[in-house]
Image (cartoon, rainbow, N blue to C red; front, side):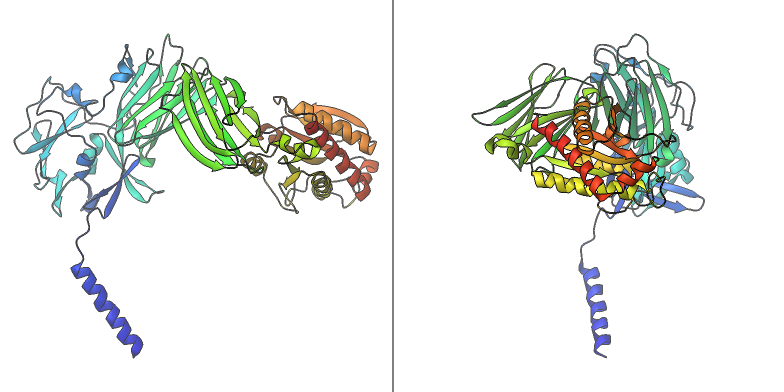
Length: 583
């Protein structure tokens, strides 16, 4: 009985709250291109065989025409200022005649009659839609002619229009499954390339989110969220140092499109977008694209700097006050000087600016002295400025080892057992893990910190291993394996490095020499290989093949704990000699 009274009381309280609470506005949401927008009424209404779009979206998109009457070409880009893209002469990118969506052709007359009193005019893909200013009447004109009554609907005081009509005017209604919302995808109706300004501009009826990636030295792919192209033919660009061709792909039902840029040579690029309006610009040049930091395994930070292409760097460690200065010569930065508070490890803040034209300067303000190194990838387009504890404050070999974290990678594991030994019951995965365990003990006894990519018999993908290394950014990455070949007579040790690595050959040489000396094994030398973990790891890395499991004698030695310890001592000695040599 008490439970029943409590339930009744709660129902009465809820009813009273609903009756007395003020009406909430903006309870409905829709995606306008790449932007989520709240509405006072449902974004879409279904009636009979038709679906209708809430025309409040036209006000939210700020598509109102600037005057009561105008020539049609004013409406092609009327709510975007593209002067920058056209400065110094430009070419409108002719996207050909391969249509993917049927659009209403704009009127051919030079002028359209002025809107009637009490009407608001909206510009849509060269057409003009006149609606009551309060959207409270079921009337409207398109290019001066009255709309059929069945194309309009009045609901809850808001005017709605047939979604097929709006699609023909450049507003495509789709459903975004990620956000679980209706999405209005706008026509990208104006694409311009300015060789003098070195930029491509896009004008869309809806807000855009544009991101780009460099596929190789001649190709850039732009992902355009929130807009679609109606015509998809490629455009060839002549006499340009930035572009030779522009291609298009559109998926309005998924809310996205793609632009493919072909270049004679890699220039770098930067994407600027207006979050409120449907405008984006791609600027060609070696721009600073990303500058972010993360704390690494040493307790200090690593600064990730992404540029458009390779550049020359100059570093200098200064005192009074302590600061680390890095100049990227030949790079560009358009923003005002940026101050990034950090207060992690020895870094108080990061400053980014331009001391002179075509030079980007990054300054790390320090609370105390540090060691550092600059690691580069992607032909010098990606840099990792890694800070390390100041070894000279401690002195000796212990000081050098302090803060130098070594990541050890036992090859294979779990569902990937690796090579099968010529002797029954022996597999590469557990033997590599056993050797790596001894190696960890040796390094920790020397004073190094050690991280393992795996500590037991589990599968770890190659991508996960490299991502783990690049996130924690250890001082070195060393992968341990056992070899196999079809020739059962082959035996010996070998150490691999990536062919593009500058530090890799030196590290591999130190490890190979010390391991052969420790074990007395056959020296098969230092070699190059495009192994995934060597290619994708940012820091100096090496891969050690400890012996051939296809050779009966060597397979037996690899399974012997005493020989595993000898291997571990040799590899550890090689790592230590590499670091103690000032590398």
